[in-house]
Image (cartoon, rainbow, N blue to C red; front, side, top):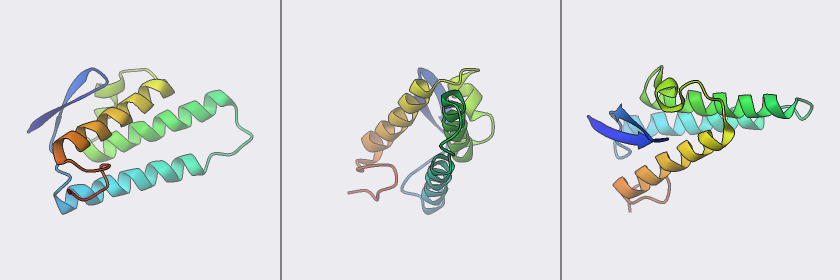
Length: 108
């Protein structure tokens, strides 16, 4: 099992973007996150928008690495900047490991 460092925390992950099942899980997680963010009503408070965004990111990581991963990565914080940084770190780790443009791409 590989260690992945996100948000300054090390998590165990069994994930390989070159594996069809893992890639399908990643694609699903990205689609679910995008759907959650696209469905935000315009008339909700900024704080609720941030919560919805963060919870979408939490669900993204849980879908990829298992329930409770969000708590390992984020603790009890619901901070959009931290969530965005975690997504960027995950994408960067995929890029470095698999030399792909983004985690949803196929290896070059």
